[in-house]
Amino acid sequence: MAFLNFLTQGAPQNSTSSSLTTTDVPQYLSDYLYNLMNGAYSAAQETYQPYGGPRIAGFAPDQQAAFGATRAAAGSYLPELNAATNTANTAAGLSPTGAAQPYFNAASQNLPGVINQYMNPYQENVINRMGDLAQRQITEKLMPGLGDTFTRAGQFGSTRQQELAQKGVRDISENLTSQIGSQLAQGYTTAGQQAQADLARQASLGQAAGQLAGTEMTGLGNIAGVQAGLGQKQQALGLQGAGALEAIGAEQQGMTQKNLDLAYQDFMNQKQYPEQQLGFLSNIVRGLPSGGSTQATNTVGSGQSYSASPLAQLASAGMSAAALSNLLPK
Image (cartoon, rainbow, N blue to C red; front, side, top):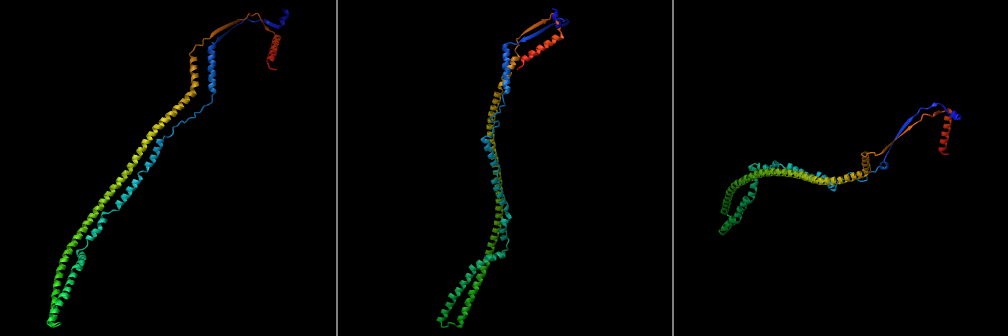
């Protein structure tokens, strides 16, 4: 057809060959992969879910009680310590020398000065009584007797009566003086003995008072030590009891914490369960053979066609543009 020669130009093109190889995936595997990807996408679209439960266990009641017991035990020693301080101050205020000093001062007096203290009551009660008795003997016996005698003789008031009266008074006075001297000597000796005994007793009392004060000081010092020890023991026992309560509370808190940790772990396991299942399914897919079929297609050209002329190329381009224009929306 010579009239169509204007559509071609040149020599005929060389013959060509091409091949196309395709692999078909089994339907069950394609569905499996589709569902797997769909589940993964859905899991990725889930929002973050915060854990709403408690994470840290609070202090148990026994721990709270232990805290209070520790606070109480911390100052429990103070009353006993204050009592020990007061007792120690009382002991420090005692002085064996000071307690004995008044007795030693009394025992250090000189004997004559002390004897006079004993003689005064002796004189009042013995010597003065002897004078009273002598006076009564003169006034009640001597003088009335002489008066009666000389009155009966008719010589009352005579010189002889006066001489006898003076002689009688002198004899009574001399006798009284002798007796008084003897009594004074005896009384002085007795007073001296009593004074010495009292001074020795004062010295003994001073020693006893000093020993008692020293013993009391030692006893009060021991009591102060016991009181301080009681305070320390009371505090130690209080802290020991508080430690036991704290140990019980720690066990309770630990059990509560385990429950909280288990609840949180359960939450995390539940939250990660979809991802774990997807991973499980993905691992299964990796271990399966694809099982698809392969098809190959070969195409061979005859080599008899000519290349299109410029006019044919323009016509072909126009038709392609019209075809693209029909596919676009109006």
